Length: 273
Image (cartoon, rainbow, N blue to C red; front, top):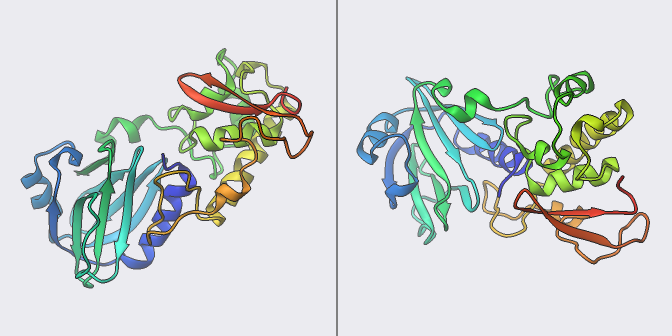
């Protein structure tokens, strides 16, 4: 599932190609991905509008339109948002929505498993996701004093908390495992027990890993492709995620896996306490 680094990479790619382009046509090949309205109403509201900004909030792409409203894409598990410069090329089989732009290119939303969402909204505050999402971990509001206050009453384990989009935006399973390994914190530690120095390590690791992943254009484990249809390269720098029974690069112990809140968690019991 695309997490913050993958969605930010897509945002940066799309900003190069679709900014100030008018949506001249929209083809919806599967109505199930269109949310919050009928397909005809979605097309009516979006067609003819110019894309004046491309933003990211958590794991969502937000395209700001010139006259009114926003186009929102939440890729979820298998969604891909790819710009195709030559609009005459054959669209991928998994293409669910195709936006034809005024520069002759196309913005294509692919989704094999149909978990993703594409919709128009006049006001982002109407959407629960945007109204309740936590702070962005690469912005100033995410800092050690905030973490100290935020975890006081958090009795649950730290890893599911990091993945809770109401707590902090954009972190999913891959980066939660990597962040906790880098900060030497066991994924089952109760959040409220973390000391100040551990929160400092967590804060530093979070920002460092997310920035490194963005520089590597994200992590392609399965379906993720960037805005140009290419794979991300951070997979080559992963230290624990999906490395069960492999040797830890630091202590030479063995990477372990267990299921936590329904998701696979990877960690080194020698390094993480």
